[in-house]
Amino acid sequence: MSNINCPEDFLYEGLVTHSRTQPFNHSFKYKITYFWFDISKRTKKITFKINKFSLFSFLHKDHGPVEKKTIDLFEYFHKKLVKNKIFNISQIKILCLPRILGYVFNPISILVCYDNKLIAKAIVFEVSNTFNQRHSYLCKIKKTNVFSLKKNFYVSPFFKVEGSYKIKFSIDRDFVNLFILYKIKNQKVFEASFKGKSKKMNELNLTKLFFKNFFQNIKATGGIYLEALKLLFKGATYTKIPKKPKHFITKS
Image 1: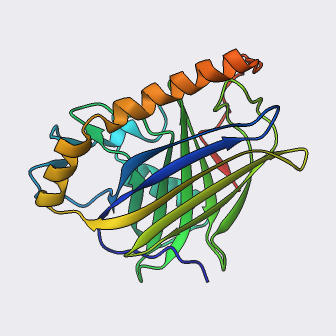
Image 2: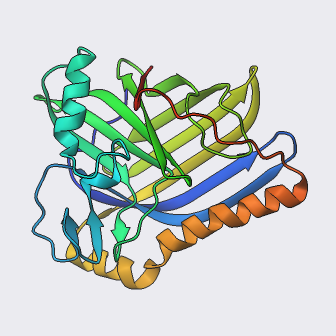
């Protein structure tokens, strides 16, 4: 059975790793803290707000189609789930980076959709690039927490829109594990992971996190551009941005 069940809200502090194997080896890693919470639940916390400014905040408009400036994220995805014959969804939880003092960039966000019995029925992998584009991959959750996806979105300027992903994801009260394997013509070219350990999402831990690591979002974004420069110096080939997918959601 899939291990994607965590009803409480948590912080997950851990390590992101990236490793490229084609056409040459290149890797890096950095520490970061992801948030896990119900996208519709109103929070009484002072340091973390939904659709309001605070030290940490989550805005619905930061997710879903870029062109939608105002959006109820639960209603949007609920309609898409029903359209894909996934019914009785009562809760959607998200693993993502929050805004910190108003700034965020999420390379990947993971939305898990639970039914009335709090059983995970579907998962959405929402991917963003640095060109103000987003795309989502929708997968039904069956007996496994491994998902196979055909790549349909331009992420890195050094990879064309081709090949496939294999994503393994699990989350519980103690740990979160995300592993992404990217293959082209059945050959591994890239892999990434995030392994995090949980902390309670309370005011004390949020305040500690802010003063300890309030530059984390800026550092993560800056790191993307820095690593891109390193790849260019190594001789990586830059590919032009293709037309974005016709539909925001690709169903697996």
